[in-house]
Length: 580
Image 1 (cartoon, rainbow, N blue to C red):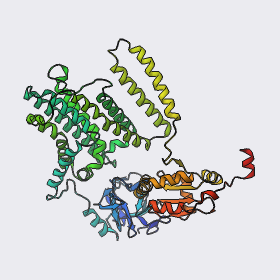
Image 2 (cartoon, rainbow, N blue to C red; image 1 turned 90 degrees about the vertical axis):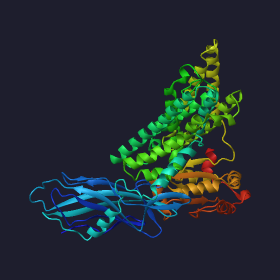
Image 3 (cartoon, rainbow, N blue to C red; image 1 turned 120 degrees about the vertical axis):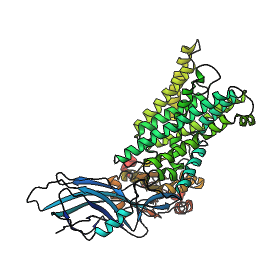
Image 4 (cartoon, rainbow, N blue to C red; image 1 turned 90 degrees about the horizontal axis):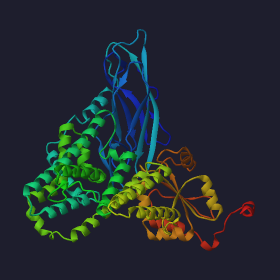
């Protein structure tokens, strides 16, 4: 007999029913069989695929108990659907989902053993206009038999197997179009803030060499293109190998590593300082003679271009790169190669047709100005990467990273001063200025109209209310697309920011990204189990106002309009007032 326990395990307030089911009623020694994590999903809700997209989390299945000698595969993902919530496109499942796993029993099962049990913990994210993390502890008990006995789930599981994309599956009618889009995507990458400065410098080098040996131009262009293509291949191969090993990774996976993000930040900062003239270091074509004319320099510049392109490629080429991850190695590498060739094409075209350079001004002082201007998109990219790093590390680590960048910048400047006979005097003065600047930045007040978020706690709410302040509490999570849309929409409004400053509103962020238990309990206290959830405490009211899940600036302003500034009085107790 097959013992499934409860037919469906349901988490509290969940919109997903989860169960662990098998295609067979019995286990046969040495005979693999399929077990499925089966979801029944409420209308209007969805869960996520292995590569959810910019928002969302993939479903996880962690085996907590397996019989001795049994092995299990990773989830075999069926074909997902596309969902667009608040303008963000994700991949996942609605109504019903089958997450298939192959279980392989040992060739011998001890005599007298009548049954085997499997247990696993399932974790998922269910979303509609709001998102709710779900989890369930599931178990499955099967009898041991010498023959295969299909279960009632056999047919649905077989149907689900047919929807698993076959290795290398592609639609012949759409794959050429995907290749074309990948090439165009790589071409447009040249205009992205991370990449454009490097392309600009290479074009300036071609302008400088215009009129010289054309073969030299072509040689450097081919070396540059080779650096781009080989680097793309290396990065794509690493991604495909790691995914084949069972890791759930998508394009841009390297940006999930704080070490990589910091390394890329340092690289971008050095490139920006180089363009600004702080120091000189050239990998590409520098002139028509000397070490700067080595093709290896152009190859390394191409590799650097790919490193700089990865932050921009992740969101911009989501369609083409997402398609590549559903194909086998051959077609996938073809897509990556198309992106690489698109990225390399401007330099190749200009080298093959140097007459196009005649449309640019002749070499002169303007080239230095253009070079310096190209540094500012890189500085902006450094700022963006630091924002990414801030979400991956704690405050102390972020501070150390910022100090490290300061030291790097100082070292670059010192490198640029090496020809100065009085450099040690300048070193002393510059070190003093750096320390002074660090102290000023630490003590500098923040802009008056900026929203300053503090981590939420019940104590902060009570203290702020006791002092007569309105309190705005945002229950949010980084994986919640609606949360980010609400915040961007509401606080992009100057009227909202000014009203918050005028009323002295205290803004608290209850970040549920890591399932903080205290936040979970607070949500439950208000009868909620999902984010976004927003509370506004007014000075005169004992209970907070619960704002809608989807916010607009006007909704927030209308709620704040109930406050009379003249009547705001602190609720400080006499004892507290005496202490103050």
